[in-house]
Image 1 (tube, rainbow, N blue to C red):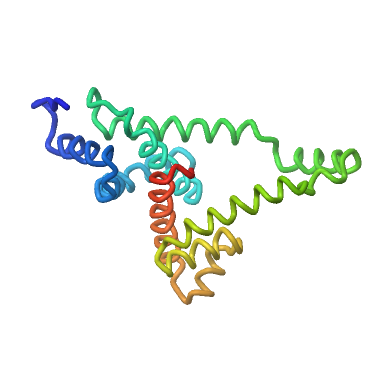
Image 2 (cartoon, rainbow, N blue to C red; image 1 turned 135 degrees about the horizontal axis):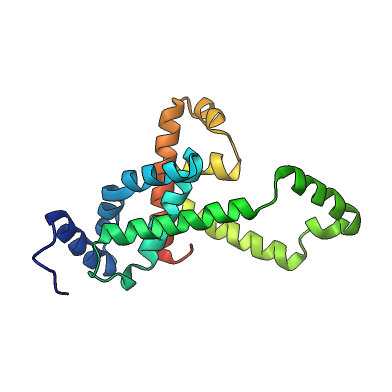
Length: 198
């Protein structure tokens, strides 16, 4: 790969990290994540004005970037490419949110559908088996995390605890819970990116 002499030192470092990441170097992925996570997160937070959505969108942006890292070319700075992925993903998210029906419309639609198709909520045996397999794979991936991160993910996503309930259960300040959960999701996403399970 040819690297232009006109680029900044940071952009040059990024290109070297990207080349290592393309070869599957885990530390290179981690360095790129740590280098840009906060700036991506705050950009997305301005767009969606919701911390939870911004966290999820940040993880999604890195997941997409890492999944398609082989398609990156040094024609643009890595940061420009990454921010474009994050922005486009966020715009798609906002569009989908705007297109989804309001809670009142949804409740009315659910009531209308109840009489038409009472059994629609019950998965058939094949769907149940597929769901069980997906859950087993997900639990196996979550099992690769350190115990404290694994516990956070299990409480938040398997038991559907609120941040407050997790803080109470783990005897931690709510800010620590949010920070560690964000870190846990980052680690999870790295695993997904490498295994192609995303």
